[in-house]
Length: 456
Image: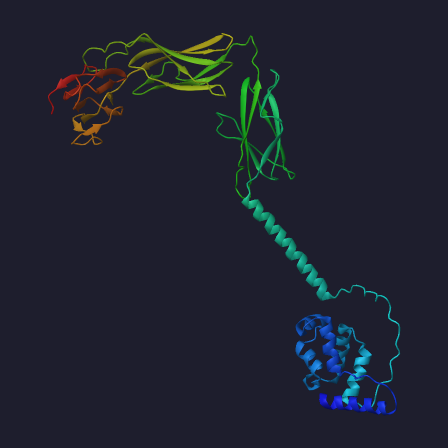
């Protein structure tokens, strides 16, 4: 039956009732009622589809009265009931009108209207196996995401380190203190390195599971410095900041400096070069190294000639003392026998001195060429052969530059400006041997003094 037939049937019923004297109002068809109710609700078919979970094409067929588009009577009843409830209509009345307009001979008995409760009790939660599995899978995914986030942050960020003891970077302790326990906090499991100046390998300690660590260090009199950093063993990243601590143990006023001389050793001999002087001291504000000339070491065996003039009787130099009390400095000495004295002095004026006797005996020829006051072209022969560094064409040496040449018997130097070319032979300063701008050639074959030659 089409919508038009349904409308005629409904009009015929109304007319028959009017003939019996019953006053009736025009009755809207079911499609019109549904459309009007949706229009009053202010929603479109697609919104109704989302809310009722009924396809929009089926809802449109209900509003058009085109029931052939619907899957069947059973589905149509269900759609009408759900749609009526959604639109605020009486579902039983809607179904009754649908049957009447459809032309069903049997009409359902009127339904008993039961008062509706104010609120329908909610159903209790039910957990199906699929829901439980989905919940567990969600928890696992979230936990894994949190773990990945923590690891990314850990790998991206270097460890931090902070001190809990001492609380300040600079502290003074009692003069009798010989040990101190350092404490701090960093990344759990991190490797903490504690380094002091002059120490090649740092002390290391591993932080506990809560990130705390502690290490007992030894103290000496004076200022003790500790540089503390942390490394994450998993990422290999080092802490951006390094904590610098300074712990000072005061000296006793009556205590004189202590002094050790590690080099040179007593009676040592040296050839060609500076003599290293070094050791360690405590309670000393300064270390002075002096050398007294004792006499020549004797001419080279098998060579004649005059002995060079002796150097000044006393030479001295001040060495810097490190935070750990070490000192080290080279001492330039000429050939001969020397007494090297190292003197450590405290701020109170107390001193401690140690002496080492050494011999400086140059073998062969050690020649240092320095240009001062201008450039100079030079050409060099070592033991009769052209020095490969300078080459057969020679080189122009800039002012202030120093070159060192070593030979077995002799070194010959051709210079384009004798006045700016200075020489040091086997540790003895000779200076410039000619005038500026005058080209000359000089032969150095110790122990004989330098002589001028005619080699072009």
